[in-house]
Image 1 (cartoon, rainbow, N blue to C red):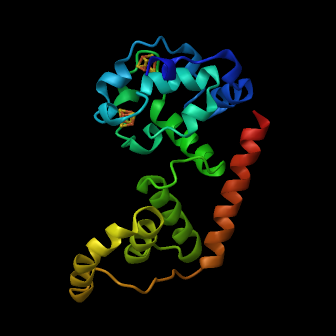
Image 2 (tube, helix red, strand yellow):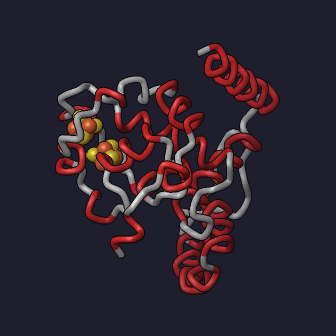
Length: 197
Ligand code: SF4
Ligand code: SF4
């Protein structure tokens, strides 16, 4: 067990460490004093594989694999408590978002864990239709993570459909192509901003 916690110099990725400090929320991570206030104030840190304090330290040292495959990114509830209490004004929550985006881009997120899959399907639906259809998003999420659970939820789903709370047909907004152009432009602008740092 102790062996797993030992980190070796050769596992470090200096490019990742540099990248981390260039992200929104990551600008100040070198100032982190490892006081642990973020971990203490975090309502879900006891469920995380790396506490927010540990994650900040691993990221700034370049332990890319541990950081990007960590469940912590996906358990973070974006409550901003850590950011408010950090004595060094480190924007931990924003940094978590940057790490999530990178984990998705590199496809190294925990594949059968529902939260990243849900985020991916949610974003895909918004890009296609401009709106989210809960039935389709939930069904795809269960199919990709644990399709047994889908069977268990079928009764509830049918009840919700009968009462008009859920629909199987996706709705689309008007001006869908304009939305898609806007999203592409925002993505390109973000990539340009990151490249210019
Ligand atoms: S509260 Fe701030 S300074 Fe303290 S460990 Fe967390 S990020 Fe670092
Ligand atoms: S924003 Fe995330 S990491 Fe920070 S305290 Fe809230 S749940 Fe924990």
